[in-house]
Amino acid sequence: MPKEYGTVISTLEGPSTRRFSFVINRDATVRRGQFVQLETEDGKLIGRVADILKTNRYFMRPESVKEYEASGKRMDEIFPVNDWEYLVADASALGVFGGNGFVDSSFPPSPGTKVAEPETDIITRFFGLDDSGLHIGKLSHHDISARLNMTRLLQKHLAILAISGAGKSFLTSVIIEELLSREPGEGIAVIVVDTHGEYTSFAEDGKFSARARVFPSREVQIGLPNISSYAIAEFSPDISAAQRRELAKVMSGLKRKNKHYGMAELIDAIDESDDIKAATKDVLVSTLEELRMTGLFGASDYPALDELARQGMLSVIDVSDIIDIKAKQMIVGYLARKLFNARKNGVIPPFVLVVEEAHQFVPEQARKEIALSRGIITTIAREGRKFNASLCLISQRPIQLSTTALSQCNTHIILRITNPYDLKHIGESSEGLTRDVLRQISSLPVGTGIIVGEAVNHPLLVRIRKRNSKASQKGISMEQAAREFHERVSQKSKDAKSFM
Image 1 (cartoon, helix red, strand yellow):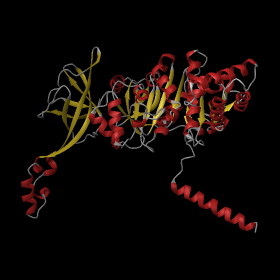
Image 2 (cartoon, rainbow, N blue to C red):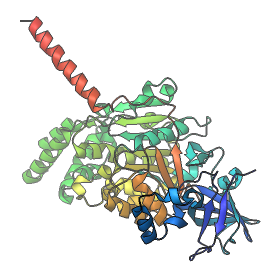
Image 3 (tube, rainbow, N blue to C red):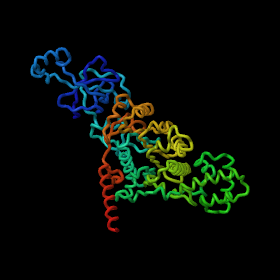
Image 4 (cartoon, one colour):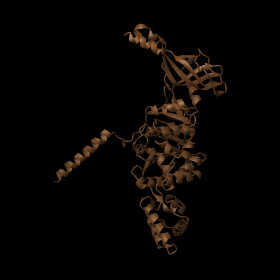
Protein backbone atom coordinates (compact mmCIF):
# COMPACT_ATOMS: atom_id res chain seq x y z
CA MET A 1 0.00 0.00 0.00
CA PRO A 2 1.28 3.51 -0.80
CA LYS A 3 2.55 5.35 2.25
CA GLU A 4 0.13 8.00 3.54
CA TYR A 5 1.65 11.49 3.84
CA GLY A 6 -1.20 13.56 5.26
CA THR A 7 -4.63 15.15 4.79
CA VAL A 8 -5.83 18.01 2.58
CA ILE A 9 -6.90 21.04 4.62
CA SER A 10 -8.99 24.09 3.84
CA THR A 11 -7.21 27.46 3.59
CA LEU A 12 -8.11 30.95 2.40
CA GLU A 13 -6.61 30.15 -1.01
CA GLY A 14 -7.83 26.61 -1.47
CA PRO A 15 -7.95 23.81 -2.28
CA SER A 16 -8.21 25.01 -5.87
CA THR A 17 -7.67 23.43 -9.26
CA ARG A 18 -4.05 24.68 -9.18
CA ARG A 19 -2.93 24.46 -5.56
CA PHE A 20 -3.78 22.67 -2.35
CA SER A 21 -2.33 22.30 1.13
CA PHE A 22 -2.14 19.29 3.40
CA VAL A 23 -1.11 18.72 6.99
CA ILE A 24 1.73 16.21 7.17
CA ASN A 25 1.37 13.13 9.38
CA ARG A 26 3.79 13.08 12.30
CA ASP A 27 5.34 9.80 11.18
CA ALA A 28 5.72 10.88 7.52
CA THR A 29 8.73 12.46 5.79
CA VAL A 30 7.89 15.01 3.11
CA ARG A 31 10.35 17.37 1.40
CA ARG A 32 10.06 20.32 -0.97
CA GLY A 33 10.02 19.07 -4.57
CA GLN A 34 8.51 15.71 -3.64
CA PHE A 35 5.57 14.31 -5.65
CA VAL A 36 2.31 13.23 -4.06
CA GLN A 37 -0.91 11.55 -5.16
CA LEU A 38 -4.53 11.92 -4.04
CA GLU A 39 -7.98 10.94 -5.24
CA THR A 40 -10.29 13.52 -6.84
CA GLU A 41 -13.60 13.31 -8.67
CA ASP A 42 -11.71 13.33 -11.99
CA GLY A 43 -9.14 10.66 -11.07
CA LYS A 44 -5.77 10.41 -9.38
CA LEU A 45 -4.21 13.84 -8.96
CA ILE A 46 -0.40 14.19 -9.09
CA GLY A 47 1.02 17.15 -7.18
CA ARG A 48 4.46 18.61 -6.41
CA VAL A 49 5.29 19.99 -2.97
CA ALA A 50 6.22 23.64 -3.57
CA ASP A 51 6.97 24.56 0.05
CA ILE A 52 6.59 23.34 3.63
CA LEU A 53 5.48 25.51 6.54
CA LYS A 54 5.55 24.95 10.31
CA THR A 55 2.68 26.21 12.41
CA ASN A 56 1.95 26.26 16.15
CA ARG A 57 -1.12 27.92 17.67
CA TYR A 58 0.76 28.86 20.84
CA PHE A 59 3.19 31.04 18.91
CA MET A 60 0.70 32.82 16.66
CA ARG A 61 0.37 35.94 18.86
CA PRO A 62 3.78 37.63 19.31
CA GLU A 63 2.60 39.84 22.21
CA SER A 64 1.52 36.78 24.20
CA VAL A 65 4.80 34.98 23.52
CA LYS A 66 6.74 38.06 24.68
CA GLU A 67 4.75 38.37 27.91
CA TYR A 68 5.06 34.71 28.85
CA GLU A 69 8.78 34.60 28.04
CA ALA A 70 9.29 37.77 30.14
CA SER A 71 8.04 35.85 33.19
CA GLY A 72 11.29 33.88 33.14
CA LYS A 73 9.81 30.64 31.89
CA ARG A 74 9.92 29.04 28.46
CA MET A 75 6.66 28.51 26.58
CA ASP A 76 7.20 24.76 26.49
CA GLU A 77 7.39 24.77 30.32
CA ILE A 78 3.95 26.39 30.56
CA PHE A 79 2.00 24.91 27.66
CA PRO A 80 2.04 21.61 25.67
CA VAL A 81 3.48 23.42 22.67
CA ASN A 82 4.99 20.28 21.08
CA ASP A 83 1.54 18.75 20.79
CA TRP A 84 0.35 21.68 18.67
CA GLU A 85 3.21 21.95 16.17
CA TYR A 86 2.27 20.92 12.67
CA LEU A 87 3.92 20.75 9.26
CA VAL A 88 1.82 22.00 6.39
CA ALA A 89 2.82 21.34 2.78
CA ASP A 90 1.80 23.70 -0.01
CA ALA A 91 1.52 21.73 -3.28
CA SER A 92 0.95 22.48 -6.96
CA ALA A 93 -1.56 20.37 -8.87
CA LEU A 94 0.25 19.01 -11.96
CA GLY A 95 -2.31 16.75 -13.62
CA VAL A 96 -4.95 14.08 -13.18
CA PHE A 97 -4.74 10.46 -14.32
CA GLY A 98 -8.14 9.23 -15.47
CA GLY A 99 -9.62 6.85 -17.97
CA ASN A 100 -8.21 8.78 -20.96
CA GLY A 101 -4.69 9.37 -19.65
CA PHE A 102 -3.48 12.60 -18.07
CA VAL A 103 -5.40 15.88 -18.20
CA ASP A 104 -5.17 19.21 -16.40
CA SER A 105 -6.84 19.42 -13.03
CA SER A 106 -10.33 20.86 -13.57
CA PHE A 107 -11.86 20.27 -10.13
CA PRO A 108 -10.28 20.84 -6.71
CA PRO A 109 -9.67 18.01 -4.23
CA SER A 110 -11.89 18.00 -1.17
CA PRO A 111 -10.60 18.93 2.30
CA GLY A 112 -10.06 15.74 4.25
CA THR A 113 -8.73 13.82 1.22
CA LYS A 114 -5.77 11.60 2.07
CA VAL A 115 -2.45 12.46 0.40
CA ALA A 116 -0.16 9.51 -0.35
CA GLU A 117 3.07 8.43 -1.99
CA PRO A 118 2.55 8.27 -5.78
CA GLU A 119 2.37 4.90 -7.52
CA THR A 120 5.56 4.15 -9.50
CA ASP A 121 3.67 3.23 -12.68
CA ILE A 122 1.59 6.41 -12.60
CA ILE A 123 4.55 8.71 -11.92
CA THR A 124 6.52 7.00 -14.72
CA ARG A 125 3.70 7.51 -17.19
CA PHE A 126 3.03 11.03 -15.93
CA PHE A 127 6.56 12.22 -16.72
CA GLY A 128 6.90 10.16 -19.89
CA LEU A 129 9.83 8.07 -18.63
CA ASP A 130 11.00 5.12 -20.75
CA ASP A 131 11.95 1.77 -19.22
CA SER A 132 14.48 1.22 -22.03
CA GLY A 133 15.69 4.82 -22.08
CA LEU A 134 18.95 6.42 -20.98
CA HIS A 135 19.42 5.94 -17.23
CA ILE A 136 20.30 9.42 -15.94
CA GLY A 137 19.65 8.88 -12.24
CA LYS A 138 16.72 8.81 -9.84
CA LEU A 139 13.88 11.18 -9.09
CA SER A 140 14.75 13.32 -6.09
CA HIS A 141 12.98 12.04 -2.93
CA HIS A 142 11.75 8.91 -4.77
CA ASP A 143 13.21 5.50 -5.52
CA ILE A 144 12.22 5.76 -9.20
CA SER A 145 14.77 5.58 -12.03
CA ALA A 146 14.86 8.54 -14.40
CA ARG A 147 15.16 6.84 -17.79
CA LEU A 148 14.80 9.23 -20.70
CA ASN A 149 13.82 8.25 -24.21
CA MET A 150 16.86 8.85 -26.45
CA THR A 151 14.88 10.38 -29.31
CA ARG A 152 12.94 12.76 -27.06
CA LEU A 153 16.14 13.81 -25.28
CA LEU A 154 18.40 14.39 -28.28
CA GLN A 155 16.55 14.68 -31.59
CA LYS A 156 15.42 18.25 -30.95
CA HIS A 157 18.70 19.10 -29.22
CA LEU A 158 19.76 19.30 -25.58
CA ALA A 159 21.23 22.10 -23.46
CA ILE A 160 23.04 21.44 -20.16
CA LEU A 161 23.33 24.63 -18.11
CA ALA A 162 25.11 25.17 -14.78
CA ILE A 163 27.81 27.14 -13.00
CA SER A 164 31.36 25.80 -12.95
CA GLY A 165 31.69 22.83 -10.59
CA ALA A 166 27.97 21.99 -10.48
CA GLY A 167 28.39 18.72 -12.40
CA LYS A 168 27.91 19.54 -16.11
CA SER A 169 30.76 17.31 -17.32
CA PHE A 170 29.79 14.57 -14.87
CA LEU A 171 26.23 14.52 -16.22
CA THR A 172 27.48 14.60 -19.80
CA SER A 173 29.75 11.62 -19.07
CA VAL A 174 26.75 9.71 -17.70
CA ILE A 175 24.80 10.43 -20.90
CA ILE A 176 27.79 9.33 -23.02
CA GLU A 177 28.03 6.09 -21.01
CA GLU A 178 24.38 5.38 -21.75
CA LEU A 179 24.79 6.12 -25.47
CA LEU A 180 27.84 3.85 -25.72
CA SER A 181 25.96 1.07 -23.93
CA ARG A 182 23.14 0.79 -26.47
CA GLU A 183 22.60 -2.48 -28.28
CA PRO A 184 24.59 -2.94 -31.54
CA GLY A 185 22.77 -1.23 -34.37
CA GLU A 186 20.80 1.03 -31.99
CA GLY A 187 23.57 3.43 -31.06
CA ILE A 188 24.43 6.79 -32.58
CA ALA A 189 27.77 8.47 -33.21
CA VAL A 190 28.92 10.72 -30.36
CA ILE A 191 31.37 13.54 -31.15
CA VAL A 192 32.58 15.70 -28.26
CA VAL A 193 34.35 19.05 -28.49
CA ASP A 194 36.43 18.78 -25.32
CA THR A 195 37.70 22.17 -24.17
CA HIS A 196 39.25 20.96 -20.90
CA GLY A 197 40.36 17.39 -21.64
CA GLU A 198 37.63 15.98 -19.40
CA TYR A 199 36.41 13.23 -21.74
CA THR A 200 39.75 11.81 -22.90
CA SER A 201 39.56 9.37 -19.97
CA PHE A 202 36.96 7.31 -21.89
CA ALA A 203 39.78 6.13 -24.17
CA GLU A 204 41.79 5.08 -21.09
CA ASP A 205 38.96 3.14 -19.44
CA GLY A 206 38.91 -0.59 -20.13
CA LYS A 207 35.10 -0.62 -20.18
CA PHE A 208 34.89 1.99 -22.93
CA SER A 209 38.32 2.21 -24.62
CA ALA A 210 37.26 -0.03 -27.53
CA ARG A 211 34.46 2.43 -28.33
CA ALA A 212 36.31 5.70 -27.74
CA ARG A 213 38.99 7.55 -29.64
CA VAL A 214 40.72 10.85 -28.91
CA PHE A 215 41.85 13.27 -31.63
CA PRO A 216 44.29 15.86 -30.21
CA SER A 217 43.93 19.31 -31.76
CA ARG A 218 47.55 19.25 -32.97
CA GLU A 219 46.62 16.35 -35.28
CA VAL A 220 43.42 17.88 -36.67
CA GLN A 221 43.84 18.95 -40.30
CA ILE A 222 41.57 20.78 -42.72
CA GLY A 223 42.27 19.48 -46.20
CA LEU A 224 42.50 22.48 -48.55
CA PRO A 225 41.62 20.46 -51.71
CA ASN A 226 38.34 19.49 -50.00
CA ILE A 227 37.08 23.01 -49.35
CA SER A 228 36.05 25.97 -51.49
CA SER A 229 37.15 29.59 -51.53
CA TYR A 230 33.83 30.35 -49.83
CA ALA A 231 34.84 28.14 -46.89
CA ILE A 232 38.17 29.96 -46.59
CA ALA A 233 36.29 33.25 -46.64
CA GLU A 234 34.26 32.02 -43.69
CA PHE A 235 37.50 31.52 -41.75
CA SER A 236 38.53 35.09 -42.69
CA PRO A 237 35.34 37.18 -43.05
CA ASP A 238 37.35 40.26 -44.06
CA ILE A 239 38.08 38.76 -47.49
CA SER A 240 36.23 40.78 -50.14
CA ALA A 241 34.18 39.30 -52.99
CA ALA A 242 36.89 40.26 -55.51
CA GLN A 243 39.61 38.62 -53.45
CA ARG A 244 37.51 35.49 -53.07
CA ARG A 245 37.02 35.28 -56.88
CA GLU A 246 40.79 35.42 -57.41
CA LEU A 247 41.30 32.83 -54.70
CA ALA A 248 38.74 30.55 -56.35
CA LYS A 249 40.56 30.75 -59.69
CA VAL A 250 43.90 29.75 -58.15
CA MET A 251 42.33 26.88 -56.16
CA SER A 252 40.52 25.66 -59.27
CA GLY A 253 43.82 25.67 -61.18
CA LEU A 254 45.53 23.60 -58.47
CA LYS A 255 42.67 21.10 -58.47
CA ARG A 256 42.82 20.71 -62.27
CA LYS A 257 46.42 19.63 -61.85
CA ASN A 258 45.18 16.94 -59.41
CA LYS A 259 47.58 18.38 -56.92
CA HIS A 260 47.29 17.62 -53.22
CA TYR A 261 48.26 20.97 -51.86
CA GLY A 262 48.50 22.60 -48.49
CA MET A 263 48.47 26.24 -47.42
CA ALA A 264 52.13 26.82 -48.36
CA GLU A 265 51.50 25.63 -51.93
CA LEU A 266 48.36 27.78 -52.20
CA ILE A 267 50.27 30.86 -51.05
CA ASP A 268 53.06 30.17 -53.54
CA ALA A 269 50.54 29.77 -56.37
CA ILE A 270 48.94 33.13 -55.56
CA ASP A 271 52.32 34.80 -55.21
CA GLU A 272 53.43 33.48 -58.60
CA SER A 273 50.22 34.43 -60.43
CA ASP A 274 50.55 37.27 -62.94
CA ASP A 275 46.77 37.66 -63.28
CA ILE A 276 46.16 39.01 -59.78
CA LYS A 277 46.55 42.69 -59.01
CA ALA A 278 49.37 43.48 -56.60
CA ALA A 279 47.09 45.01 -53.98
CA THR A 280 44.72 42.03 -54.07
CA LYS A 281 47.63 39.61 -54.02
CA ASP A 282 49.20 41.26 -50.96
CA VAL A 283 45.97 41.07 -48.97
CA LEU A 284 45.33 37.45 -49.95
CA VAL A 285 48.85 36.34 -49.12
CA SER A 286 48.70 38.13 -45.77
CA THR A 287 45.33 36.57 -44.93
CA LEU A 288 46.43 33.07 -45.92
CA GLU A 289 49.67 33.44 -43.95
CA GLU A 290 47.60 34.11 -40.84
CA LEU A 291 45.60 30.94 -41.51
CA ARG A 292 48.78 28.95 -42.17
CA MET A 293 50.17 29.98 -38.78
CA THR A 294 47.31 28.13 -37.07
CA GLY A 295 48.76 24.84 -38.32
CA LEU A 296 45.27 23.57 -39.12
CA PHE A 297 45.53 23.35 -42.91
CA GLY A 298 47.02 20.47 -44.86
CA ALA A 299 46.65 18.41 -48.02
CA SER A 300 43.93 16.14 -46.59
CA ASP A 301 41.37 16.01 -43.80
CA TYR A 302 42.09 14.46 -40.42
CA PRO A 303 40.18 12.84 -38.92
CA ALA A 304 38.34 11.37 -41.90
CA LEU A 305 34.56 11.12 -41.74
CA ASP A 306 34.53 7.36 -41.16
CA GLU A 307 36.88 7.86 -38.20
CA LEU A 308 35.02 10.84 -36.78
CA ALA A 309 31.42 9.56 -36.91
CA ARG A 310 31.19 5.87 -36.04
CA GLN A 311 27.90 4.27 -35.01
CA GLY A 312 27.85 3.47 -31.31
CA MET A 313 31.29 5.03 -30.85
CA LEU A 314 32.75 8.14 -29.20
CA SER A 315 35.13 10.60 -30.84
CA VAL A 316 36.72 13.23 -28.61
CA ILE A 317 38.16 16.34 -30.29
CA ASP A 318 40.58 17.51 -27.59
CA VAL A 319 41.11 21.26 -28.01
CA SER A 320 42.20 21.79 -24.40
CA ASP A 321 45.73 22.80 -25.41
CA ILE A 322 44.58 25.60 -27.77
CA ILE A 323 44.52 29.11 -26.29
CA ASP A 324 43.43 30.99 -29.42
CA ILE A 325 39.61 31.00 -29.46
CA LYS A 326 39.58 31.68 -33.20
CA ALA A 327 41.55 28.47 -33.89
CA LYS A 328 39.10 26.53 -31.71
CA GLN A 329 36.17 28.00 -33.60
CA MET A 330 37.75 27.09 -36.95
CA ILE A 331 38.06 23.45 -35.90
CA VAL A 332 34.54 23.28 -34.51
CA GLY A 333 32.99 25.15 -37.43
CA TYR A 334 34.70 23.01 -40.04
CA LEU A 335 33.96 19.66 -38.37
CA ALA A 336 30.35 20.64 -37.61
CA ARG A 337 29.72 21.59 -41.27
CA LYS A 338 31.44 18.42 -42.47
CA LEU A 339 29.30 16.26 -40.17
CA PHE A 340 26.04 18.01 -41.02
CA ASN A 341 26.55 17.82 -44.79
CA ALA A 342 27.50 14.14 -44.53
CA ARG A 343 24.45 13.37 -42.43
CA LYS A 344 22.13 15.17 -44.87
CA ASN A 345 23.51 12.91 -47.60
CA GLY A 346 23.14 9.78 -45.44
CA VAL A 347 26.88 9.10 -45.50
CA ILE A 348 27.27 8.83 -41.72
CA PRO A 349 25.00 7.50 -38.94
CA PRO A 350 22.78 9.74 -36.81
CA PHE A 351 24.99 11.70 -34.43
CA VAL A 352 25.06 14.04 -31.47
CA LEU A 353 27.68 16.79 -31.43
CA VAL A 354 28.49 17.69 -27.82
CA VAL A 355 29.95 21.21 -27.49
CA GLU A 356 31.52 22.13 -24.15
CA GLU A 357 31.72 25.86 -23.29
CA ALA A 358 29.15 26.41 -26.04
CA HIS A 359 29.01 30.17 -25.39
CA GLN A 360 32.54 30.33 -26.86
CA PHE A 361 31.47 28.70 -30.13
CA VAL A 362 27.99 30.09 -30.63
CA PRO A 363 27.99 33.43 -28.77
CA GLU A 364 25.06 35.80 -28.73
CA GLN A 365 26.68 39.18 -29.34
CA ALA A 366 30.16 38.58 -30.80
CA ARG A 367 31.25 40.01 -34.15
CA LYS A 368 31.26 37.62 -37.11
CA GLU A 369 35.07 37.47 -37.32
CA ILE A 370 35.27 36.12 -33.75
CA ALA A 371 32.23 33.87 -34.04
CA LEU A 372 33.37 31.62 -36.90
CA SER A 373 31.46 28.54 -35.77
CA ARG A 374 28.22 30.30 -34.84
CA GLY A 375 26.64 30.08 -38.30
CA ILE A 376 26.86 26.32 -38.78
CA ILE A 377 25.92 25.48 -35.18
CA THR A 378 22.86 27.72 -35.49
CA THR A 379 22.00 25.99 -38.78
CA ILE A 380 22.21 22.54 -37.15
CA ALA A 381 20.09 23.86 -34.27
CA ARG A 382 17.38 24.95 -36.73
CA GLU A 383 17.51 22.10 -39.25
CA GLY A 384 19.34 19.20 -37.64
CA ARG A 385 16.32 17.37 -36.23
CA LYS A 386 15.08 16.66 -39.78
CA PHE A 387 18.25 14.67 -40.42
CA ASN A 388 18.85 13.25 -36.91
CA ALA A 389 21.87 15.52 -36.53
CA SER A 390 21.69 16.55 -32.88
CA LEU A 391 23.41 19.09 -30.67
CA CYS A 392 24.19 19.02 -26.98
CA LEU A 393 25.23 22.53 -25.92
CA ILE A 394 26.90 22.84 -22.51
CA SER A 395 27.43 26.23 -20.92
CA GLN A 396 28.04 27.95 -17.60
CA ARG A 397 26.93 31.33 -19.02
CA PRO A 398 23.60 30.80 -20.81
CA ILE A 399 23.05 34.56 -21.14
CA GLN A 400 26.12 34.69 -23.43
CA LEU A 401 24.88 31.75 -25.52
CA SER A 402 23.07 32.44 -28.79
CA THR A 403 19.37 32.89 -28.10
CA THR A 404 18.57 31.25 -31.44
CA ALA A 405 20.62 28.15 -30.68
CA LEU A 406 19.38 27.88 -27.09
CA SER A 407 15.74 28.29 -28.11
CA GLN A 408 16.11 25.38 -30.54
CA CYS A 409 17.29 23.08 -27.71
CA ASN A 410 13.92 21.64 -26.77
CA THR A 411 15.26 19.93 -23.64
CA HIS A 412 17.19 21.71 -20.91
CA ILE A 413 18.92 20.00 -18.00
CA ILE A 414 19.65 22.72 -15.47
CA LEU A 415 22.00 22.21 -12.56
CA ARG A 416 22.92 24.86 -10.02
CA ILE A 417 23.02 28.44 -11.36
CA THR A 418 23.38 31.49 -9.12
CA ASN A 419 23.84 34.43 -11.50
CA PRO A 420 20.52 36.36 -11.52
CA TYR A 421 20.89 37.36 -15.19
CA ASP A 422 21.42 33.73 -16.20
CA LEU A 423 18.45 32.66 -14.08
CA LYS A 424 16.23 35.27 -15.71
CA HIS A 425 17.44 34.16 -19.16
CA ILE A 426 16.69 30.51 -18.35
CA GLY A 427 13.26 31.37 -17.00
CA GLU A 428 12.42 33.13 -20.26
CA SER A 429 13.84 30.44 -22.55
CA SER A 430 12.78 27.22 -20.75
CA GLU A 431 9.12 26.44 -21.26
CA GLY A 432 7.37 24.74 -18.36
CA LEU A 433 9.54 26.17 -15.56
CA THR A 434 7.20 27.38 -12.84
CA ARG A 435 8.28 30.03 -10.36
CA ASP A 436 8.62 27.56 -7.47
CA VAL A 437 10.83 25.28 -9.61
CA LEU A 438 12.89 28.24 -10.88
CA ARG A 439 13.55 29.35 -7.31
CA GLN A 440 15.15 25.99 -6.52
CA ILE A 441 17.86 26.30 -9.20
CA SER A 442 20.18 28.57 -7.20
CA SER A 443 20.17 26.18 -4.24
CA LEU A 444 20.45 22.84 -6.03
CA PRO A 445 23.10 20.56 -4.51
CA VAL A 446 25.92 19.31 -6.75
CA GLY A 447 24.73 16.28 -8.71
CA THR A 448 21.07 17.30 -8.83
CA GLY A 449 19.41 18.77 -11.90
CA ILE A 450 16.05 19.88 -13.23
CA ILE A 451 14.98 18.41 -16.57
CA VAL A 452 12.49 20.46 -18.55
CA GLY A 453 11.24 20.31 -22.12
CA GLU A 454 10.75 17.67 -24.79
CA ALA A 455 12.35 14.76 -22.87
CA VAL A 456 9.79 14.89 -20.04
CA ASN A 457 6.13 15.79 -19.83
CA HIS A 458 6.67 18.04 -16.79
CA PRO A 459 9.74 19.56 -15.07
CA LEU A 460 11.55 16.81 -13.22
CA LEU A 461 14.10 17.01 -10.37
CA VAL A 462 16.71 14.25 -10.71
CA ARG A 463 19.69 13.03 -8.66
CA ILE A 464 22.34 12.14 -11.24
CA ARG A 465 23.58 8.56 -10.88
CA LYS A 466 27.20 7.58 -10.25
CA ARG A 467 29.54 7.30 -13.21
CA ASN A 468 30.60 3.89 -14.53
CA SER A 469 33.54 5.36 -16.45
CA LYS A 470 36.94 6.52 -15.30
CA ALA A 471 36.96 10.12 -14.08
CA SER A 472 39.26 12.66 -15.69
CA GLN A 473 42.58 13.18 -13.93
CA LYS A 474 42.90 16.77 -15.17
CA GLY A 475 40.72 18.31 -12.51
CA ILE A 476 42.75 18.18 -9.28
CA SER A 477 42.38 20.08 -6.02
CA MET A 478 44.35 23.25 -5.31
CA GLU A 479 46.14 21.48 -2.47
CA GLN A 480 47.28 18.67 -4.75
CA ALA A 481 48.36 21.14 -7.46
CA ALA A 482 50.40 23.07 -4.87
CA ARG A 483 52.09 19.85 -3.66
CA GLU A 484 52.90 18.73 -7.19
CA PHE A 485 54.38 22.14 -8.04
CA HIS A 486 56.49 22.11 -4.88
CA GLU A 487 57.76 18.61 -5.68
CA ARG A 488 58.71 19.63 -9.24
CA VAL A 489 60.58 22.73 -8.06
CA SER A 490 62.37 20.74 -5.36
CA GLN A 491 63.36 18.05 -7.84
CA LYS A 492 64.69 20.65 -10.31
CA SER A 493 66.75 22.20 -7.51
CA LYS A 494 68.20 18.80 -6.59
CA ASP A 495 68.99 18.02 -10.22
CA ALA A 496 70.71 21.38 -10.68
CA LYS A 497 72.87 20.82 -7.59
CA SER A 498 73.88 17.35 -8.77
CA PHE A 499 75.36 18.83 -11.97
CA MET A 500 77.35 21.52 -10.15
